[in-house]
Length: 404
Image (cartoon, rainbow, N blue to C red; front, top):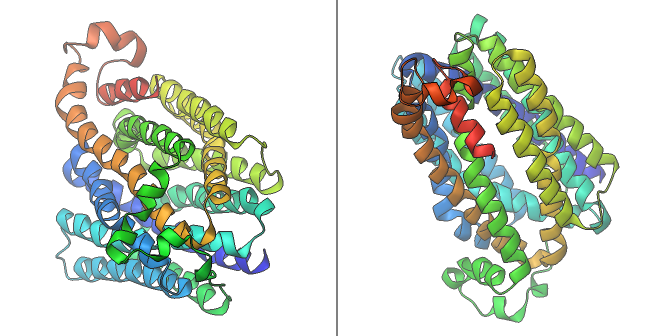
């Protein structure tokens, strides 16, 4: 676990830098456009390449040196940040540049996730899978705590160029940890005979075939697909909803997102010291129900910072439980030699749900829910007692509906 912890630290620092940049860019886009769709398109472009190239990336991960894959992934993402920095400093940064950077950066992420997930399986013992996955969730959650507050403060005193530069420094930390840690390679000959006989193109689809032939894994994947699709409707409007209902207060948004991060850290810490239930599927199901109740239904019904923060905190405690329990199931059931392909296919199936949800959520918020929930709007009389009427009320109604 010692070597894994060093890689984990590098990823923690890198994730923090990326989250600060994402927060600052969300504020910038909302101030420039005031449109949910413009904001929602950034993650859509960020997911589509991963959706298209995820299976191929997974197949290549199983063939390539995993340290090299991880370094190229971080290096490619850093190159996109450098491009945005140059565009900003020359006064040429436009919103479509963010879409392009998100798309290209997603190509590198498509390789990073299966490589990192498969590397965990080789660096820690089976009984520590849940603990290691909890630590990865903890890294993401710690960034969620610090990044919104840091982003809200930095965007007040610094410009986007400074934030891009900080992000580049955090990538350097991650690359350094990957250079100094010995990352084991799987025994390629352990791959099932059916996998060995396939060429790269057919190998790309091996992960899908593997999942389809195993009803238990397929059922879990479809469950997570449905959950991701529905929750994306609420998550797509979270930032503009809070900004609209708080008068554009970035500190309120930072406080709410940090509260969510604290909750996720608490959940990750619990998993770091507790291996979880022996029936991991129960952890997935309970986590989905409780996270949806607090982070969407009750969150959407609230209208002020204390309640938003409380519900975000409680709900996100359960999010690492979902991720870690789900990840542990797959790591136990899938041989390490083919995890790159299977995890790449698994990521692709999950990613399909997210851009679909965001593509629907943006136009629905801008053209249906928000106009209908303004004073005198078509739905205002019916739903105003629940979510109020005015800026952000339509998005609040969407969030409640998604949670239910």
